[in-house]
Amino acid sequence: MRIGCLGAARIAPAALVAPAQVRGGAVLQAVAARDPQRAAAFAGRHGFLRSEGDYDALIAAPDIDLIYNALPVNLHAVWSIRALEAGKHVLCEKPFAMNAAEADAVLAAGQASGRRVIEAFHYRYHPGFAQLLAWIRAGAIGDVTGLDAAFSVPIADLGGTEIRHRPETGGGAFMDLGCYPLSWTLAVMEAAPVTVEARAILTPRGVDESLEASLMFAGGVEASLSASMAANARFAARFTVTGERGRIEFLNPLAPQLGARLSLTLDGRTESVPLSRISTYAFQLDAVLAGLESGETLPTEGRAILRQQRALDAVYGAAGLHHLRFGPAV
Image 1 (cartoon, one colour):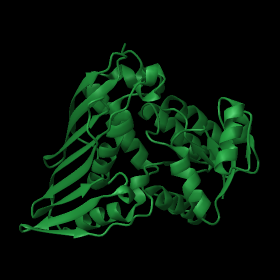
Image 2 (image 1 turned 90 degrees about the vertical axis):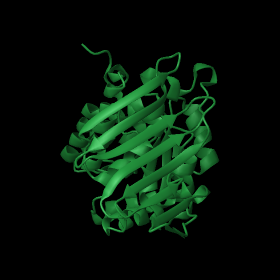
Image 3 (image 1 turned 90 degrees about the horizontal axis):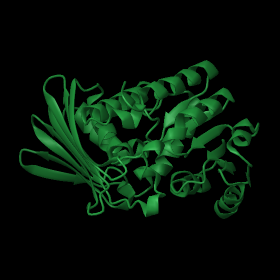
Image 4 (image 1 turned 180 degrees about the horizontal axis):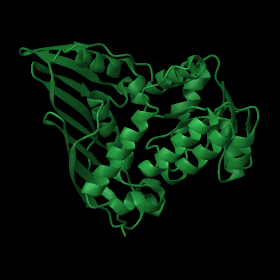
């Protein structure tokens, strides 16, 4: 599979380059960035066969099968659509789009082109998260009664250059960080929340520095989610699922390869299971390439994308931040 990378992004070396370099059948064909010189330097540093002069040249290249879209969030939809229309499959970084309307348009372009578009929620392909879901589906903890999830890490504004602090590029703690706890929750519940409540603390530039949300699902199941990128935030990545008979706790479901703990507690006894130290990104690339070859639907495409985007919209709306996803309300 010949891969083109849209954007010389900070995430690309870990998310794409390293997995591709150790996997057979994946070729780092080309990369494009806003600055052609930066793209050329990135290509040389990370083993791409070449760089292209701009995004259009990359997606038009006939020797590329899959586009990895690592651009800022506000550019995800437009360039994913162009890549799909050019006959390329797309692996798009999270969050998938600015809002559900954009996500709908991307998925429609995929259907029209006959090409696949997948959201890069890499954690979902790690065996640790598969084990969590297997316990739940097997009824190990009984019916789910509650969920609690958080992801926080300090993110500095870097003199106004950090895109996660900029409203126009899809910034905000819950967009960049909170999308993970939301995704963990929706992977378990496999349904949209019935009601959403949220409150946020804003940065001087007007994006959410921290946000807490409460999602109520059918049957009275409540999920408490939080995310913060404040300067004084302490790193946290945790997910707890409580059931009628016990609970599952996952410390660092985001990147278990960096150190994590997954445990099942029943009747006061806790059992932890070993976790693979292979990168979540490696598992993701394996699954994406295998899925493209077999035609098997992946867990981070199709309806899962729309459910996630609609819930993101609902959280921001409940927090009074509708304008960050859609522009000023009219």
